[in-house]
Length: 497
Ligand code: NDP
Image (cartoon, rainbow, N blue to C red; front, top):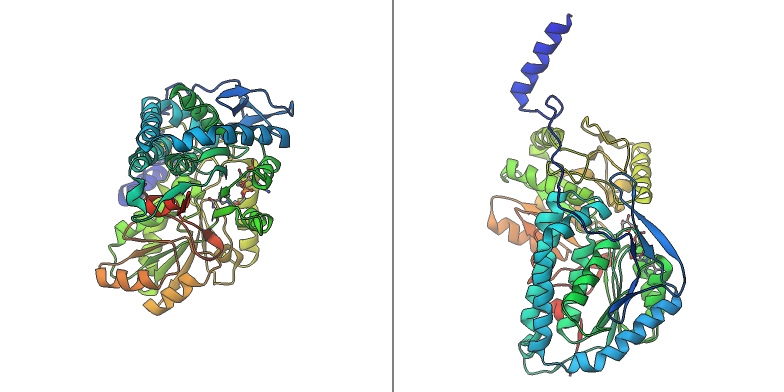
């Protein structure tokens, strides 16, 4: 066959499937706003950036291209102790401040974040690897929304618990993960502050930058010194926060393993605890669903934020009668996903957060294939530098396969099918987790019937990954306990008297 004929055939295929991805070279569309990242960040204790007592620092690199973007202080036990001491000193005045005054500070933080939204979005993308369109349109606006929402509660606490008094707990220790660094900070800080607590917070080692930039906003907002203290470091720093005797409560989001360790550590101490841990969400597609919308929901459910989402729809449950059609459409849609530089506005799937996480994902997928799973990945060119993983389907699997049981926390979807609604519920609940699920059907009554049978903290109907500060979020079983967001999340930071 001549080269000329070959070319014509490729064009025909393009016209039929409307796939342009690899045939057209798009110009890059890099986000151009400056990220405003300092070369070095100290610890934020008592309202100012201070040198770590440990004298140690570590590099923060961008998963986008493995280049160093900043140097971060490594807090040891003495640093954590200093942070608790500053928070303890700030507590009496902050907790006695009128709610309306605390609310003003929270409003100010929300507005300052909005003012610098573009800069925060670029910093979040550089530091964590998520696509700029997600950082810009989801993480940053949603973080601001949490501060606005809780600012509204600060002077209305008597309505949060009618007939009771809601008192702050004291100094709260908070440890957050790397998948939504700024948003998780907002989920944790805003309700704690609205209620009059003071805080010691640790971001993840791989994503400390936006928390430290947020410390600048705290300073600019004029928040009284010591109300929020941000200490950076790795697991040992987190453990020091958990163990510190001055902590009235620990709020943790992260892996189930570390969550279990924290629970054991706190047993018998009287400290309050909320845990938001992993998940293995079922995305259930019934034969009467609008298939094209459902396919978009599957894509969003697993590939949003490279699948680094505790509530990701990482187990697809599709009714057998439509499985072939759904799989065909899903594979076609996956071919049009653009994987690459997260700073490019056209990118759908950005960089995996760290080399370690890329290794974990690769290993779990390899194990899945060794166990007999059929792997599908669309052809896509991955950047040579940085940490990237192609969107992946794992078919031909059953409930006992590791890729169906274990949280992968990457862009990897396992495919199961079912025949009856009862089987769908049985399979969806057959997991040690219980954080999220999605149900796709044309029938409202079917959605309601299924949703009430799913042991899952959140069940989305004909949608996935929808969030709102007014809506409580949290898990069942090994996905943890306690709620974040809404009135329920607020109550986790107070004592009813
Ligand atoms: P971790 O649970 O280790 O990290 C979450 C946070 O806890 C980070 O700030 C981490 O610090 C801190 N931490 C680590 N060890 C301790 C400790 N002993 N005491 C207190 N804090 C601690 O998650 P990984 O980063 O190791 O990710 C591993 C897996 O966990 C992922 O593959 C994913 O499956 C799951 N995960 C789930 C998340 C969720 O939202 N549910 C979020 C993140 C991970 P540092 O990072 O600095 O070490």
